[in-house]
Length: 157
Length: 296
Image 1 (cartoon, rainbow over the protein chains, first blue to last red):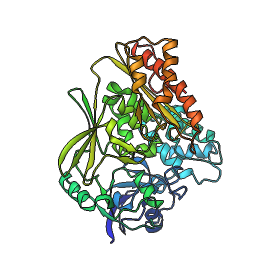
Image 2: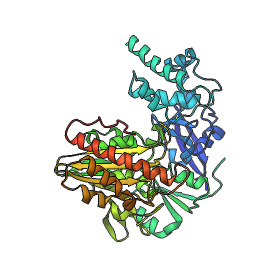
Image 3: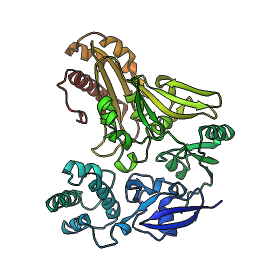
Image 4: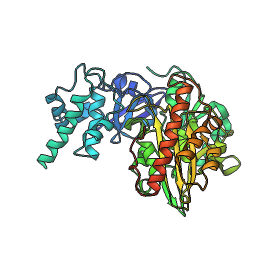
Protein backbone atom coordinates (compact mmCIF):
# COMPACT_ATOMS: atom_id res chain seq x y z
CA UNK A 1 0.00 0.00 0.00
CA UNK A 2 1.34 3.42 -0.94
CA UNK A 3 1.44 6.35 1.44
CA UNK A 4 1.96 9.97 0.52
CA UNK A 5 5.04 11.36 2.18
CA UNK A 6 5.78 15.08 2.43
CA UNK A 7 9.36 16.27 2.74
CA UNK A 8 11.07 19.65 2.60
CA UNK A 9 13.71 18.71 0.05
CA UNK A 10 16.34 21.39 -0.42
CA UNK A 11 13.89 24.01 0.73
CA UNK A 12 11.05 22.89 -1.48
CA UNK A 13 7.95 21.03 -0.27
CA UNK A 14 7.71 17.77 -2.18
CA UNK A 15 5.08 15.05 -2.02
CA UNK A 16 5.72 11.52 -3.15
CA UNK A 17 3.86 8.22 -2.95
CA UNK A 18 5.93 5.43 -1.43
CA UNK A 19 5.50 1.86 -0.21
CA UNK A 20 6.91 0.94 3.22
CA UNK A 21 9.73 -1.10 1.66
CA UNK A 22 11.11 1.81 -0.37
CA UNK A 23 14.46 3.15 0.79
CA UNK A 24 14.94 6.92 1.10
CA UNK A 25 18.06 6.86 -1.10
CA UNK A 26 16.18 5.21 -3.96
CA UNK A 27 13.20 7.53 -3.65
CA UNK A 28 15.46 10.59 -3.69
CA UNK A 29 17.24 9.40 -6.81
CA UNK A 30 14.42 7.80 -8.75
CA UNK A 31 11.29 9.65 -7.74
CA UNK A 32 12.51 13.04 -6.60
CA UNK A 33 15.25 13.57 -9.19
CA UNK A 34 18.07 14.23 -6.74
CA UNK A 35 21.05 12.14 -7.77
CA UNK A 36 23.94 13.51 -5.71
CA UNK A 37 23.47 10.86 -2.98
CA UNK A 38 25.19 7.81 -4.43
CA UNK A 39 24.37 4.12 -4.19
CA UNK A 40 27.53 2.58 -2.74
CA UNK A 41 27.52 -0.25 -0.21
CA UNK A 42 23.80 -0.02 0.63
CA UNK A 43 24.56 -1.09 4.20
CA UNK A 44 25.71 2.05 5.94
CA UNK A 45 29.43 1.47 5.66
CA UNK A 46 30.61 3.81 2.90
CA UNK A 47 28.81 7.12 3.42
CA UNK A 48 28.23 7.77 -0.30
CA UNK A 49 24.46 8.06 0.30
CA UNK A 50 24.84 10.68 3.07
CA UNK A 51 22.13 13.35 3.23
CA UNK A 52 21.26 15.90 5.89
CA UNK A 53 18.05 15.00 7.72
CA UNK A 54 16.98 18.00 9.81
CA UNK A 55 20.56 19.22 9.55
CA UNK A 56 22.22 15.99 10.69
CA UNK A 57 24.15 13.60 8.48
CA UNK A 58 22.41 10.25 8.02
CA UNK A 59 22.75 7.23 5.76
CA UNK A 60 19.84 7.46 3.35
CA UNK A 61 20.38 3.78 2.45
CA UNK A 62 19.35 2.79 5.99
CA UNK A 63 16.21 4.90 6.21
CA UNK A 64 12.80 4.03 4.86
CA UNK A 65 11.37 6.83 2.72
CA UNK A 66 8.23 6.69 4.82
CA UNK A 67 10.28 7.58 7.93
CA UNK A 68 11.24 10.90 6.33
CA UNK A 69 7.65 12.13 6.31
CA UNK A 70 7.51 15.64 7.73
CA UNK A 71 11.26 16.09 7.81
CA UNK A 72 13.74 18.35 6.09
CA UNK A 73 16.28 16.84 3.69
CA UNK A 74 19.27 18.63 2.26
CA UNK A 75 21.56 17.30 -0.45
CA UNK A 76 24.42 18.91 -2.35
CA UNK A 77 21.88 20.24 -4.86
CA UNK A 78 20.39 22.32 -2.05
CA UNK A 79 23.72 23.53 -0.68
CA UNK A 80 24.96 24.87 -3.99
CA UNK A 81 21.89 26.78 -5.09
CA UNK A 82 23.67 30.10 -5.00
CA UNK A 83 26.98 28.81 -6.26
CA UNK A 84 29.68 26.88 -4.46
CA UNK A 85 29.89 27.18 -0.69
CA UNK A 86 33.23 28.26 0.83
CA UNK A 87 33.81 24.60 1.76
CA UNK A 88 33.22 23.44 -1.80
CA UNK A 89 35.50 26.21 -3.05
CA UNK A 90 38.19 25.02 -0.67
CA UNK A 91 37.79 21.40 -1.84
CA UNK A 92 38.15 22.64 -5.40
CA UNK A 93 41.28 24.62 -4.58
CA UNK A 94 42.84 21.64 -2.81
CA UNK A 95 42.09 19.36 -5.72
CA UNK A 96 40.46 17.15 -3.10
CA UNK A 97 38.67 14.64 -5.28
CA UNK A 98 39.57 12.36 -8.12
CA UNK A 99 36.63 10.20 -9.25
CA UNK A 100 34.16 12.20 -7.17
CA UNK A 101 31.90 9.33 -6.10
CA UNK A 102 32.42 10.05 -2.40
CA UNK A 103 32.30 13.83 -2.89
CA UNK A 104 28.61 14.52 -2.15
CA UNK A 105 28.78 12.55 1.10
CA UNK A 106 32.07 14.17 2.08
CA UNK A 107 30.69 17.64 1.36
CA UNK A 108 27.63 17.02 3.54
CA UNK A 109 29.60 15.47 6.41
CA UNK A 110 32.00 18.40 6.37
CA UNK A 111 29.16 20.91 6.03
CA UNK A 112 27.49 19.47 9.15
CA UNK A 113 30.82 19.64 10.98
CA UNK A 114 31.42 23.28 10.03
CA UNK A 115 27.89 24.19 11.16
CA UNK A 116 28.72 22.88 14.65
CA UNK A 117 32.39 23.72 14.75
CA UNK A 118 33.20 26.61 12.39
CA UNK A 119 36.96 26.18 12.72
CA UNK A 120 37.66 22.45 13.14
CA UNK A 121 41.02 20.89 13.90
CA UNK A 122 42.51 18.21 11.68
CA UNK A 123 41.38 15.58 14.23
CA UNK A 124 37.82 16.90 14.20
CA UNK A 125 37.78 16.92 10.40
CA UNK A 126 38.99 13.31 10.32
CA UNK A 127 36.40 12.28 12.89
CA UNK A 128 33.62 13.94 10.88
CA UNK A 129 34.47 12.10 7.67
CA UNK A 130 35.53 8.79 9.26
CA UNK A 131 32.40 7.17 7.87
CA UNK A 132 32.86 8.47 4.33
CA UNK A 133 35.10 6.15 2.36
CA UNK A 134 37.27 7.48 -0.45
CA UNK A 135 39.27 5.06 -2.56
CA UNK A 136 41.17 7.65 -4.63
CA UNK A 137 42.80 10.31 -2.55
CA UNK A 138 44.05 8.93 0.76
CA UNK A 139 41.88 11.61 2.44
CA UNK A 140 44.71 14.09 3.00
CA UNK A 141 43.57 16.75 0.48
CA UNK A 142 39.99 16.43 1.76
CA UNK A 143 41.00 16.94 5.38
CA UNK A 144 43.25 19.84 4.39
CA UNK A 145 40.41 21.51 2.49
CA UNK A 146 38.01 21.21 5.44
CA UNK A 147 40.54 22.65 7.89
CA UNK A 148 41.42 25.45 5.45
CA UNK A 149 37.75 26.32 4.92
CA UNK A 150 37.42 26.72 8.69
CA UNK A 151 40.53 28.87 8.93
CA UNK A 152 39.32 31.09 6.11
CA UNK A 153 35.98 31.54 7.80
CA UNK A 154 37.75 32.56 11.00
CA UNK A 155 39.80 35.13 9.12
CA UNK A 156 36.66 36.59 7.59
CA UNK A 157 34.90 36.77 10.94
CA UNK B 1 15.10 -0.22 -6.04
CA UNK B 2 12.95 -1.07 -3.10
CA UNK B 3 13.77 -3.79 -0.60
CA UNK B 4 12.58 -7.06 -2.17
CA UNK B 5 10.61 -8.07 0.90
CA UNK B 6 7.26 -6.34 1.41
CA UNK B 7 6.05 -5.36 4.83
CA UNK B 8 3.57 -3.08 6.55
CA UNK B 9 4.54 0.08 8.40
CA UNK B 10 2.90 1.24 11.61
CA UNK B 11 3.75 4.28 13.66
CA UNK B 12 1.83 4.18 16.93
CA UNK B 13 1.70 7.34 19.01
CA UNK B 14 1.21 5.78 22.44
CA UNK B 15 2.90 3.05 24.43
CA UNK B 16 -0.42 1.27 24.85
CA UNK B 17 -0.95 1.11 21.11
CA UNK B 18 2.64 -0.05 20.56
CA UNK B 19 2.36 -2.88 23.08
CA UNK B 20 -0.98 -3.94 21.62
CA UNK B 21 0.50 -4.03 18.13
CA UNK B 22 3.57 -5.96 19.23
CA UNK B 23 1.40 -8.43 21.14
CA UNK B 24 -0.82 -8.95 18.12
CA UNK B 25 2.02 -9.59 15.65
CA UNK B 26 4.54 -11.29 17.96
CA UNK B 27 7.69 -12.33 16.14
CA UNK B 28 6.19 -11.12 12.83
CA UNK B 29 6.72 -7.52 14.02
CA UNK B 30 10.02 -5.70 14.45
CA UNK B 31 10.53 -2.45 16.31
CA UNK B 32 12.12 0.37 14.32
CA UNK B 33 13.98 3.17 16.11
CA UNK B 34 17.16 4.35 14.35
CA UNK B 35 16.99 1.50 11.86
CA UNK B 36 20.73 1.29 11.23
CA UNK B 37 20.67 -2.39 12.11
CA UNK B 38 17.07 -3.30 11.28
CA UNK B 39 16.93 -1.87 7.76
CA UNK B 40 20.14 -3.59 6.67
CA UNK B 41 18.88 -6.90 8.09
CA UNK B 42 15.64 -6.60 6.12
CA UNK B 43 17.41 -5.37 2.98
CA UNK B 44 19.83 -8.30 3.13
CA UNK B 45 16.97 -10.72 3.68
CA UNK B 46 18.23 -11.90 7.07
CA UNK B 47 14.84 -11.17 8.58
CA UNK B 48 11.46 -10.75 6.91
CA UNK B 49 8.95 -9.14 9.29
CA UNK B 50 5.31 -8.72 8.25
CA UNK B 51 5.22 -5.36 9.92
CA UNK B 52 7.70 -2.74 11.07
CA UNK B 53 6.63 -0.74 14.11
CA UNK B 54 8.23 2.70 14.08
CA UNK B 55 8.43 4.00 17.66
CA UNK B 56 9.58 7.50 16.69
CA UNK B 57 6.03 8.75 17.11
CA UNK B 58 5.96 7.82 20.79
CA UNK B 59 6.45 10.84 23.04
CA UNK B 60 9.05 11.05 25.79
CA UNK B 61 11.45 8.38 24.61
CA UNK B 62 14.05 10.83 23.34
CA UNK B 63 15.05 12.06 26.78
CA UNK B 64 18.21 11.77 28.81
CA UNK B 65 17.32 12.34 32.46
CA UNK B 66 19.40 12.31 35.61
CA UNK B 67 17.29 12.21 38.75
CA UNK B 68 17.98 10.93 42.25
CA UNK B 69 21.29 9.45 41.22
CA UNK B 70 19.86 7.47 38.30
CA UNK B 71 20.44 8.20 34.64
CA UNK B 72 17.58 7.23 32.34
CA UNK B 73 18.25 6.97 28.63
CA UNK B 74 15.11 6.72 26.49
CA UNK B 75 14.75 4.26 23.64
CA UNK B 76 15.04 7.02 21.01
CA UNK B 77 18.24 8.59 22.38
CA UNK B 78 20.94 8.33 19.74
CA UNK B 79 24.66 7.93 20.30
CA UNK B 80 25.10 11.53 19.07
CA UNK B 81 22.60 12.71 21.70
CA UNK B 82 24.69 10.94 24.35
CA UNK B 83 27.89 12.39 22.94
CA UNK B 84 26.47 15.92 23.11
CA UNK B 85 24.86 15.57 26.53
CA UNK B 86 26.41 17.69 29.31
CA UNK B 87 25.15 15.31 32.02
CA UNK B 88 26.77 12.34 30.28
CA UNK B 89 30.05 14.24 29.91
CA UNK B 90 29.98 15.21 33.57
CA UNK B 91 28.61 12.15 35.36
CA UNK B 92 29.24 9.27 32.94
CA UNK B 93 32.29 10.28 30.89
CA UNK B 94 33.03 6.67 29.99
CA UNK B 95 29.74 6.50 28.05
CA UNK B 96 30.93 9.49 26.06
CA UNK B 97 34.33 7.82 25.63
CA UNK B 98 32.55 4.77 24.18
CA UNK B 99 30.47 6.81 21.71
CA UNK B 100 33.64 8.30 20.23
CA UNK B 101 34.74 4.91 18.95
CA UNK B 102 31.33 3.72 17.92
CA UNK B 103 30.67 3.68 14.16
CA UNK B 104 30.65 7.02 12.34
CA UNK B 105 28.86 10.33 12.86
CA UNK B 106 26.25 9.43 10.23
CA UNK B 107 25.40 6.22 12.10
CA UNK B 108 25.62 7.79 15.57
CA UNK B 109 23.10 10.42 14.48
CA UNK B 110 20.55 7.69 13.96
CA UNK B 111 21.52 4.61 15.98
CA UNK B 112 20.15 4.39 19.51
CA UNK B 113 21.79 2.94 22.59
CA UNK B 114 18.69 0.98 23.52
CA UNK B 115 18.57 -0.35 19.97
CA UNK B 116 22.16 -1.47 20.42
CA UNK B 117 21.06 -3.43 23.51
CA UNK B 118 18.07 -4.89 21.64
CA UNK B 119 20.18 -5.98 18.66
CA UNK B 120 22.27 -7.87 21.22
CA UNK B 121 25.18 -8.61 18.93
CA UNK B 122 28.10 -9.99 20.96
CA UNK B 123 30.39 -7.17 19.82
CA UNK B 124 28.03 -4.38 20.93
CA UNK B 125 29.74 -1.61 22.90
CA UNK B 126 26.78 -0.42 24.97
CA UNK B 127 26.30 -3.73 26.80
CA UNK B 128 29.68 -4.02 28.49
CA UNK B 129 29.86 -0.31 29.35
CA UNK B 130 26.41 -0.31 30.96
CA UNK B 131 27.04 -3.62 32.72
CA UNK B 132 29.70 -2.17 35.00
CA UNK B 133 27.09 0.30 36.24
CA UNK B 134 24.61 -2.49 37.01
CA UNK B 135 22.19 -0.87 34.58
CA UNK B 136 18.72 -2.25 33.90
CA UNK B 137 16.61 -2.24 30.75
CA UNK B 138 13.17 -0.67 31.22
CA UNK B 139 10.57 -2.94 29.68
CA UNK B 140 6.89 -2.31 28.99
CA UNK B 141 4.51 -5.04 27.91
CA UNK B 142 1.00 -6.46 28.18
CA UNK B 143 1.65 -7.25 31.87
CA UNK B 144 2.83 -3.72 32.66
CA UNK B 145 6.26 -2.32 33.27
CA UNK B 146 9.29 -4.01 34.76
CA UNK B 147 13.05 -3.75 34.64
CA UNK B 148 15.58 -6.33 33.58
CA UNK B 149 19.12 -6.14 35.00
CA UNK B 150 21.59 -6.09 32.14
CA UNK B 151 23.17 -9.28 33.47
CA UNK B 152 19.90 -11.09 32.65
CA UNK B 153 19.10 -9.20 29.46
CA UNK B 154 21.30 -10.91 26.87
CA UNK B 155 20.43 -14.52 26.11
CA UNK B 156 22.83 -15.08 23.23
CA UNK B 157 23.82 -13.57 19.91
CA UNK B 158 20.92 -11.38 18.76
CA UNK B 159 18.71 -12.72 21.53
CA UNK B 160 17.30 -10.92 24.53
CA UNK B 161 14.76 -11.89 27.18
CA UNK B 162 12.07 -9.67 25.64
CA UNK B 163 8.78 -11.56 25.37
CA UNK B 164 5.86 -11.22 22.99
CA UNK B 165 4.35 -7.76 23.13
CA UNK B 166 7.22 -6.31 25.14
CA UNK B 167 9.32 -3.31 24.22
CA UNK B 168 12.41 -1.76 25.76
CA UNK B 169 11.51 1.85 26.51
CA UNK B 170 14.85 2.84 28.00
CA UNK B 171 17.76 1.93 30.19
CA UNK B 172 18.33 3.03 33.80
CA UNK B 173 21.91 3.56 34.91
CA UNK B 174 22.56 4.17 38.61
CA UNK B 175 25.51 6.42 39.38
CA UNK B 176 27.75 4.66 41.92
CA UNK B 177 27.57 6.40 45.29
CA UNK B 178 31.28 5.98 45.92
CA UNK B 179 33.86 8.10 44.17
CA UNK B 180 34.68 6.33 40.95
CA UNK B 181 36.22 6.51 37.50
CA UNK B 182 36.01 4.27 34.46
CA UNK B 183 37.70 3.30 31.26
CA UNK B 184 36.60 1.75 27.96
CA UNK B 185 39.23 0.03 25.82
CA UNK B 186 38.20 -1.06 22.33
CA UNK B 187 40.32 -3.11 19.97
CA UNK B 188 39.69 -2.39 16.30
CA UNK B 189 41.37 -3.38 13.05
CA UNK B 190 42.07 0.22 12.14
CA UNK B 191 41.42 3.72 13.37
CA UNK B 192 38.09 4.92 12.11
CA UNK B 193 34.84 3.08 12.29
CA UNK B 194 34.97 -0.60 13.09
CA UNK B 195 33.13 -3.11 15.22
CA UNK B 196 35.02 -4.27 18.30
CA UNK B 197 37.41 -7.17 17.93
CA UNK B 198 37.23 -7.09 21.70
CA UNK B 199 36.39 -4.51 24.35
CA UNK B 200 37.16 -4.13 28.03
CA UNK B 201 35.35 -1.79 30.41
CA UNK B 202 36.68 -1.08 33.88
CA UNK B 203 34.95 0.82 36.66
CA UNK B 204 37.23 1.68 39.58
CA UNK B 205 35.56 2.60 42.86
CA UNK B 206 37.16 4.19 45.89
CA UNK B 207 38.48 1.55 48.26
CA UNK B 208 40.15 -0.50 45.51
CA UNK B 209 36.95 -2.03 44.25
CA UNK B 210 36.61 -2.83 40.58
CA UNK B 211 33.95 -3.87 38.13
CA UNK B 212 35.07 -5.22 34.77
CA UNK B 213 33.21 -6.38 31.68
CA UNK B 214 34.09 -7.68 28.27
CA UNK B 215 32.59 -7.37 24.78
CA UNK B 216 33.03 -9.49 21.64
CA UNK B 217 34.69 -12.35 23.53
CA UNK B 218 31.64 -14.42 24.46
CA UNK B 219 28.12 -14.99 23.06
CA UNK B 220 27.04 -11.97 25.09
CA UNK B 221 28.71 -9.16 27.03
CA UNK B 222 30.09 -10.61 30.26
CA UNK B 223 31.04 -9.29 33.69
CA UNK B 224 34.34 -10.58 35.03
CA UNK B 225 33.07 -11.56 38.46
CA UNK B 226 36.04 -13.75 39.40
CA UNK B 227 38.46 -10.98 38.47
CA UNK B 228 36.37 -8.50 40.46
CA UNK B 229 36.51 -10.78 43.51
CA UNK B 230 40.27 -11.19 43.15
CA UNK B 231 40.87 -7.43 42.94
CA UNK B 232 38.43 -6.48 45.70
CA UNK B 233 40.01 -4.27 48.33
CA UNK B 234 43.57 -4.83 47.19
CA UNK B 235 45.77 -2.11 45.73
CA UNK B 236 46.81 -2.77 42.12
CA UNK B 237 50.26 -4.33 41.99
CA UNK B 238 52.17 -6.00 39.19
CA UNK B 239 51.50 -9.38 40.78
CA UNK B 240 47.78 -8.67 41.18
CA UNK B 241 47.48 -7.50 37.57
CA UNK B 242 49.17 -10.70 36.38
CA UNK B 243 46.80 -12.77 38.50
CA UNK B 244 43.81 -10.90 37.08
CA UNK B 245 44.94 -11.51 33.50
CA UNK B 246 45.54 -15.18 34.33
CA UNK B 247 41.85 -15.52 35.28
CA UNK B 248 40.64 -14.40 31.83
CA UNK B 249 40.21 -17.93 30.39
CA UNK B 250 37.69 -18.57 33.16
CA UNK B 251 35.71 -15.43 32.31
CA UNK B 252 35.63 -15.19 28.52
CA UNK B 253 35.33 -17.58 25.58
CA UNK B 254 36.44 -15.79 22.42
CA UNK B 255 35.91 -17.36 19.01
CA UNK B 256 37.68 -16.96 15.69
CA UNK B 257 35.69 -14.95 13.16
CA UNK B 258 36.19 -12.49 10.32
CA UNK B 259 37.58 -9.82 12.64
CA UNK B 260 40.11 -11.76 14.75
CA UNK B 261 41.26 -15.18 15.91
CA UNK B 262 40.37 -16.44 19.36
CA UNK B 263 44.06 -16.58 20.32
CA UNK B 264 44.60 -12.95 19.33
CA UNK B 265 41.48 -11.89 21.20
CA UNK B 266 42.54 -13.71 24.37
CA UNK B 267 46.05 -12.28 24.20
CA UNK B 268 44.88 -8.73 23.55
CA UNK B 269 42.15 -8.75 26.19
CA UNK B 270 44.91 -9.46 28.70
CA UNK B 271 46.80 -6.37 27.56
CA UNK B 272 43.62 -4.29 27.49
CA UNK B 273 42.51 -5.43 30.95
CA UNK B 274 45.85 -4.46 32.44
CA UNK B 275 45.88 -1.07 30.71
CA UNK B 276 42.22 -0.48 31.51
CA UNK B 277 42.69 -1.22 35.21
CA UNK B 278 45.73 1.04 35.41
CA UNK B 279 43.97 3.85 33.53
CA UNK B 280 40.74 3.65 35.54
CA UNK B 281 42.73 3.62 38.81
CA UNK B 282 44.80 6.58 37.62
CA UNK B 283 41.66 8.48 36.60
CA UNK B 284 40.23 7.81 40.03
CA UNK B 285 43.41 9.22 41.55
CA UNK B 286 43.06 12.26 39.31
CA UNK B 287 46.12 11.64 37.18
CA UNK B 288 44.88 9.33 34.45
CA UNK B 289 44.71 9.84 30.71
CA UNK B 290 41.88 12.14 29.54
CA UNK B 291 38.67 10.38 28.59
CA UNK B 292 38.79 9.63 24.88
CA UNK B 293 42.48 8.75 24.88
CA UNK B 294 42.98 5.45 23.10
CA UNK B 295 44.93 2.96 25.21
CA UNK B 296 45.44 0.42 22.46
